[in-house]
Image (cartoon, rainbow, N blue to C red; front, side, top):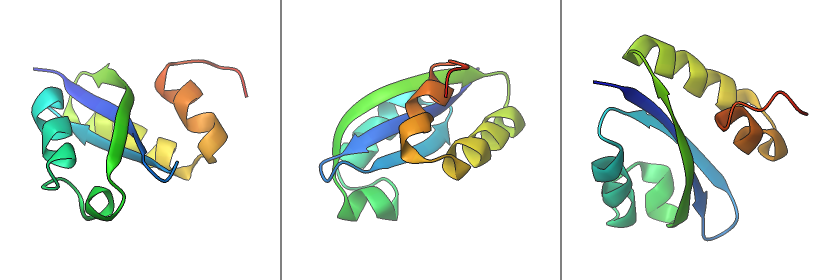
Length: 84
């Protein structure tokens, strides 16, 4: 079973990053208002993408990294791009 780092674009233009081992179900929970507190107040517009990781520890480290990046670099990080 893979763990996923995912990135959601919210209706206000902000991004939300999270991890899960059930990507479709987790995104559906965000859309239904049962996801994270942040996405309840900033409803999801679309799933920008997801990146698989071997285990929860790796996914958690990647989540920590992506949350430290400025918004304009988050999608590149998720897609594995080395460009700034």
